[in-house]
Length: 112
Length: 114
Image (cartoon, chains in turn purple, cyan):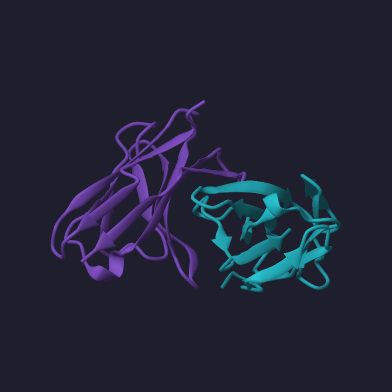
């Protein structure tokens, strides 16, 4: 009954460091996406994927990279962390064209 | 562009009070509308949805009706409980949109006091 699993749950980075947020789903969903949640801003789409090998940019893609080599996994990479990337990150998966997203529990990232 | 506007709160109510959280939208085409709920320390989960005008979504005592004439999708519950304390997000999706991502409102923080 795992659903969408994100790791790590908490991370502290220094400016300029790189890291990868992991996301895995076991529901065989084609669609996966990454959002960031900031106070007063709601959720904003970073990147999304409509299937293995296919990714595209969302509303706020700068500073982030993604890849989708398998249906199950959709990692989010921060190449050179900046304080503006301090946020809570959510991964989600969905069946195509339904809008019914299944979210992970979130990863809280602090960049000093 | 597409957008969702909702009251941000916090909204504080006493247990058993009537709840309304307003949501209005701007969209091209005919969107599907959603309410998601986020309990403390958790990810969002779908609460209810409606896919066409005059549809009513309902779940766990919550209801919302898709009103095309007023471009609204207000969330209501007749008698709230302490366990309803959470952040509620209104969202829309345009059929045929390139991304399956939704456009979310900023969220309404609801606090229910015993």
